[in-house]
Length: 272
Image (cartoon, rainbow, N blue to C red):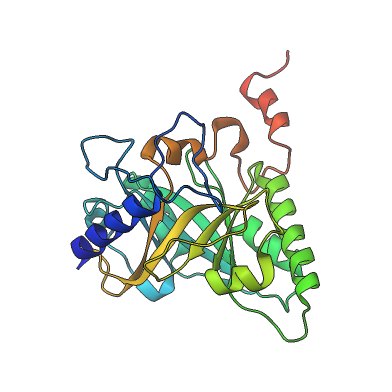
């Protein structure tokens, strides 16, 4: 099944101009892409290969990461927390196993608009330790609450994003669905990259000031080592660009270290 999905995706990516083979530090897919430029999807060139990943949570239960690592999966986003009360029971295992098997990893928080934002920040930052080579943290925006206005939602989302940026020293990614994006987020967060869920033959449609880096292509993927359907995602660039998106050496630090990333330099070269 996954081979058929990959072949179909390669065709879509080629016609949509998704694959980027430039010299820029990090690839971005913006709202005004040139859709007329086809791109190679052969595996002979790392700059033209389709970079595929997954995202997992308790719904996938115990994943065999050894088998996953042999299935062409380059990265995985892992659910860490939800609201202010839930840690995913499989997060710790998934977090360690992805690193052990050489799969680039990123942690995400499922946001609940009705819960005070500071409590959600505290839960995520006390749960997740970011290390060099990890993907940026992700804020998962899928649900709305009738007692929260769109303006309040955006204000609280910005509070979460800025607090997490300060804590880890790296700017988070925003995950959302195509419809949620259009209704609540479009054009409001141009400084953040998006990860868009769109189960369609058409790539994500975004505002011209926004950029998307990941496309959740399907929620019905099949991967060896996972005994249930799994979301499959594609990255808007090559493996080198994916690596450049990851946390660099000086910005990654422990959940127990409340210092700014710059101040960490003194630990690497202690003053006399």
